Amino acid sequence: MPKNILSHKYVYGVVALVTILVLIAWIRADSFDVHRATLKRQTDTIEVSKPSRMQLFYGELEYLPHTYTFTIHEATQFHTRIMIPEDGTQTVSGILVREPEGKGRVTEIARLHGYEASWDSARLRLTGDEYREGPAFDTELAPGRYRLEVHTADNTEPYMLTIGTDAERTMEYAAFIGELISLKKFLGESGATIIFSPYVYAPLYFVLLIVWGAYLWYRSRRVA
Image (cartoon, rainbow, N blue to C red; front, side, top):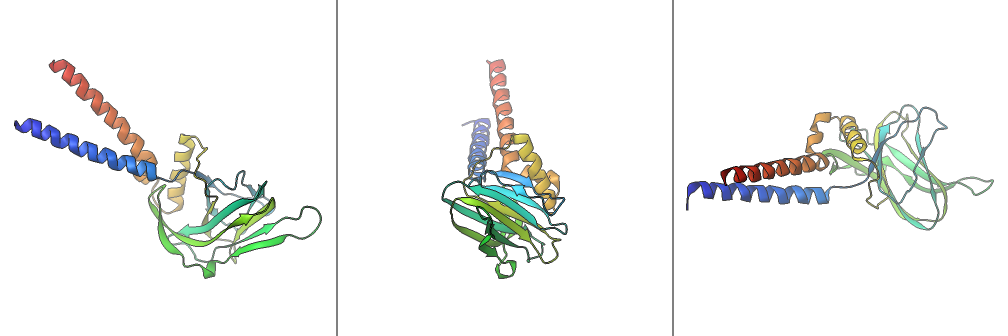
């Protein structure tokens, strides 16, 4: 068998293997909206439109707690977790309360104590960066209006917060990639390393694969 045929088969085999690996990484990649949380006044809140849908918020407490508000229309399984950058301070905590339907006091649902969490290291598959997982809360919530406050003793720490479990991304691709670049910088990495996110390298790889296939087709037509 001619050597060039063997070399071609080797190249095609490598391309097929890489394609399978890239496709698996693309399929396994998390898919949810990412938002930067910024508040200017203590009375400001961040409205979560659909708490069952997985969303990631990230930001820095600037002498103010961050309060997330949402409405449960029917009994729904609710999940949330506090996270921090790899070198963040392991004191970020939270409290979830239900607002009264009329006059009255709020009802405490849960406290997420930072000092009780193990803060294990994990890797964010969206960007490939490491972070630490803090306290989490998972239960069924009855219909009502809720507030989730993230805070520390002095409210000066960076944090991340996930809400919901249903993987669904509603953001446009360009806006999504822009948030991922911002998130990488927030985690202490260069924005240029976004290329290591499957949401960037997978589409780029398949574009290059199509270009390569078109080139091979064109060259075969020229030879024929």
